[in-house]
Amino acid sequence: MDRESARGSAYAYNAMAKTHGWAAYCDHTLDFHWPAFEDLREIWNRARAGECPPRRAAMTARLLKDYLRCIAIYERFVDDKGVRRYRARLVGTGYAQVYGELTGKVVDEIVSGEKLLRFHLALDQTLKSSAPLRIIAAAEIPDKSFLSAEYFLAPLADDTGTPSMVLICAHFSGERPWVEYFADARARIAAREAAR
Image (tube, rainbow, N blue to C red):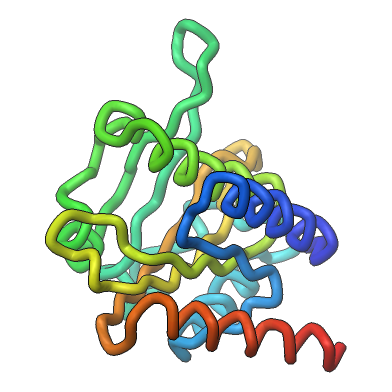
């Protein structure tokens, strides 16, 4: 697992976020606010079994049982016109409560514009990094704009060992306004990087 690659992926995401004014930030240090993400990262690491990233088949329902409600798995594919696209392969009930039932749907058929660019970039950079990433973002969903979200994103390989899927686990909170949540998260990340 290459943390330098993860750093580069985070910087690429954050540069685009700044350019486009997205209320989102990618953290390669994995300074998780929700403690359960630490456990999920350990599950991902154990499932690797010397491979990076782990194969999707290694991330069994039994391993993920405590997280199934709040996960989604997206698979990258190239359509018959040569266009890179993502399909939702699995969507947990908690994830679906916020984003809707997406299982089997192709992302660019339900999301467009800046939201599509932001979503594809997060998935692309996760696959490029070959390592987990953390993204924090304001929820930009009608009737749910009060939510802040923390996401654990981790690449997965298909049965041939080709990285082509991204596992996302989401934790939503409405306890604090996005501006406060973001400022606190950035301060924690800066302190963690300074301590290295």
